[in-house]
Length: 267
Image (cartoon, rainbow, N blue to C red; front, side, top):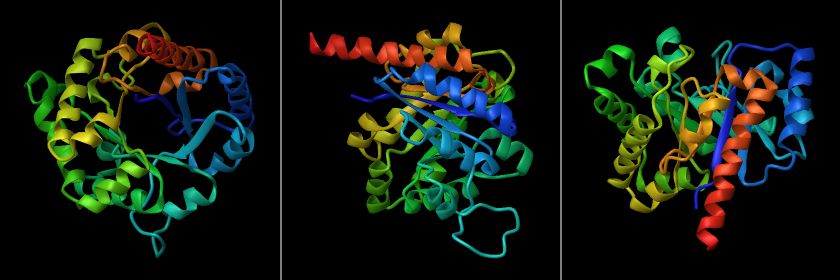
């Protein structure tokens, strides 16, 4: 059974004092939630602080991006081993904001995915369509092209490595990020199912195990309905991850859905 996963993406937010208050409250709120996995991806400069506050808790920490090279003359870049040195286990890759604002492409995102796998990081690879693409009925075409850029770079051995570090796909419809619009649970399920079937073409066993999470204006009030979908394995949370009570409520929804599923399987 796949464990639900909730990842908070802080983006470019935070300061030392606010971070401490937020993380301490989240640690306290998630302490007894043992049926799902939780991660916060903070700005690189605050990873030291996140590690200090999250060590020996049930919350992991990660980066928001990584370079495809291990070292070199790349001013401002972060190498994979720099994240693992600080205890990071997850890294977000291919986010639409990186694509749209910093001109990353399918190919560069795929290279970063490969680098993360080699470093032992769990890549959280984002896919999703714009509003124009969505309204033109191109959702599956766009998502397939983004996924295939990664899949094409992986040999069978590399695919096995990717499974060993529990690779994650995140469906983030660009039209729903920060807009207040959210895909309905049925819309999310349809795309997540498509993603799983796409992976199954390469490796059916991997398709059954890989976690596919949803991002795009997930809030406490809609999280449970989204996470109840059979192919929605949690959420990648943006703005709501900066509000302790909201993020805790979303994590509680993921934990509750997972707990209910466990009970159903036992009976």
